[in-house]
Image 1 (spheres, rainbow, N blue to C red):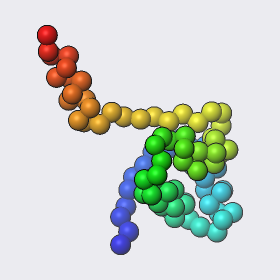
Image 2: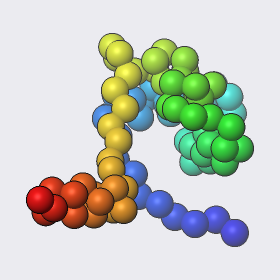
Image 3: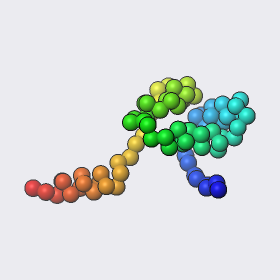
Amino acid sequence: MDAKVTLSFDASVIQSAKKFAESQNISLSRLTEFLYRQLESKQYKSLEELPISDWVNMVAEGQAEYKTRKSSKSLKETFYESRKG
């Protein structure tokens, strides 16, 4: 069963990804699903280890920038640590 997700990307990255997906005769949704399945294998310790890292660098203009967020657990721990003392 498919689930719908809303994501935001830089417009130029989406254009490049659409062209790549079209050249592979798949939809952008299926390309994205394929990339997520790579993550599902759980054998990677960092974003740079993913086999898609080179592809991201190829389609991105300039150096790829990974934006990460702290988990809510990590944020809570940081907050509680700052309250001690």
